[in-house]
Structure formats: C-alpha cells, structure tokens
Image (cartoon, rainbow, N blue to C red; front, side, top):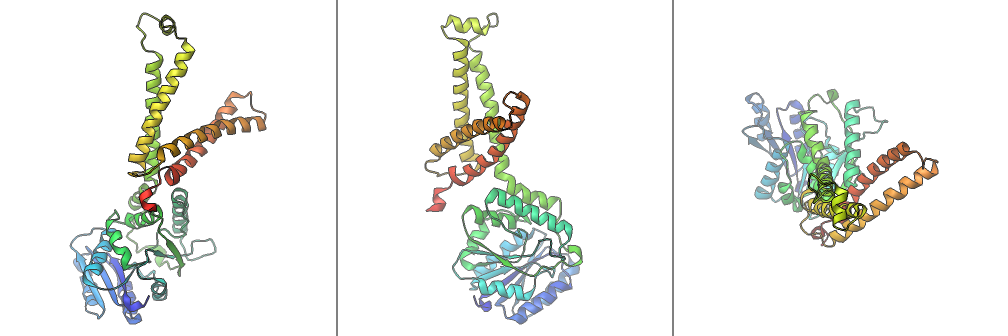
Length: 377
C-alpha cells in the first residue's frame, strides 16, 4: 500500500522528546497522516502535543482524563473512519521503540480490503542482547500460553507496532478492552475468527531498560492473562460444578427412599432390587444428568456458542473417547512398568493421565465440539 494512504496512529500518555522526534521522521517519510491521541496527559505535557499539532500532516486528539491505550486506539479508529479516506492504519508506541523504516515496511506489506493483522515482531531469542531479561521471560511465557490455548504461535504478543486495512477497522471498535488488554483481545479475536495474523520481523529497541513504559507489571499482566485463561477458567468451573452435581445426585438416588430407621439394603430388597443394581442405576442417572448439564454450560457459558450444529454428538464422541483413553492409558502404563498390583502407583498414573487428557479435552471442545458454524460460513 502507498504510504500516503496510511495513517500512523500513536496513543500517548505524558510523552517526552522521543515522541516529537519520531513524529518528525514519520512526516518527513511521507505518511498520509500522523494521528496522536493524548490520553489524559497533564498540563505539563501539552506543549509537546501543541507542537505536534502545528506540523503539517499531523493531528492531535485529546482525552480529558486517562482512559487507557485501548480507548485511545478506538478514538483514533473512529476518527480515521469518519474524517478521512485513508485506506490503512499503522499503530505505534510513543516511547521511541519503533523505527521509521519498520513502519514504512509494514505500510508496504499492507493490502487494502484484506482482513489481515500485521504484527511487527521483535527478537526475543537468547541471541538478542537488546532485550532485558524480565521482558524476554514475560514475552516468551505469554507467547507459549497463547499458543497453548489458541493454537497460534506469535513470537511477540505485546508489540504495539501493528498494521491493518480500513476494511478491518469497524470490527476493531467492537473488540472489548480499554487499556493494555485491548491488544491481547485483538489477537484473541483474530485467532477465534480464524483471521490471518502475519508476523513481520522488526528491529528490537529497548531504551533505558524500558523504563518509559506505562505498563503496570501486576495490574496489566493480570488483565492480559485473565483474557487468555478466561474460557479455560470457565471450563474448570463448569467441570467442578457438574462433578458436585453428579456426586449429590448419586448420593440422593443411592439412598432414596430410605427411612431413617431402615438400612438401605433392607429397603431396596423390599422393592425387589439389589443394592448393586441400584448403585449402577444411580451412577448412570447421575452421570447422564451431569453430562447434559456440562454440555449446556460449555456451549452457553464457557465457549458462548449460539449455533454449533452437531455439537451434541461431537460432545458425546469426545466424552466416550476420553473415557476409553483414560482407562486404556492408565492400564497400559501400569502394565508396562509392572505396577498393576500397586494401587498407589495406579492412582498417581491416573492423576497424571487424566490431567493431560483434561487439557486435551478442553482444546478439542474449543476447536471442534463447539466450533461456531456461523464463523465458518
């Protein structure tokens, strides 16, 4: 895409001279517009924004109070849609860590009318000496967790240098989040909707050990990881609740109708039913009810899918497959190591196997059982 058809959008909170230097270079490079969002900076910093606003090809929008990076990006997206005819947007940070050549490169790769998120990706490998250790660890951990839950490996999930076409902007306004978590939600949105994300290597720049960032390591990290783990936590909660329902219903069925003065065995014998048969019947009734409840909760509350044709059958197939795999693997591993008679060892093996299968079950349900057929149409 021609750089003259691109806007460079920069959210900013209490910037320094690095912002003015970056904006000067961007305007000299010939971008169609440099749009800076003042996200509630104090009066002390207004001369910087006034200076930028006075330059040709620049525009500054102000938030009266700090609303967060996500809110600032949405303000910029709305302005571009409503007030310009520009066809591409490149978001960048104001702390001097993005170079003009990298920004130009993203503009060249951008294609009009294509829903593709370009991600400027820094080098977080061990060979890079420019990255502070805590930043390398944090980014690698986030990339690994994102890949585990969304099946997409993104080497730099926290990059602020991103590019997208005008055709993709309206959807960005509907993505939740007003602060740093917005950018993670943007990645999750693309992953869930099977939209392309293209990784573009960029120069790795960290100034003063990244001291200029407004990213709060605890508060903002919690917001980001809460998003990544969100559906998994709901999945765990639904599983726990349904397990309790299963146990409660089994207990009620197993001991009903038992008067306080008569034992369970006597009561069921009077009805002509053996205690063993009642136990089996109670187990199956409780399991069928709790499984049905779990299916409903996963569809409606965990993965929030309204239309997923055939999900009931897929859920049943996965449940049976997981049960068979669990029994087969536990028995097979115990036999392989000669532990069939060691009850404690069998219990440990079952815990390990079922934990691994639990994560696999989550991924299968998320990506296959409760896939959204509307998104595939």
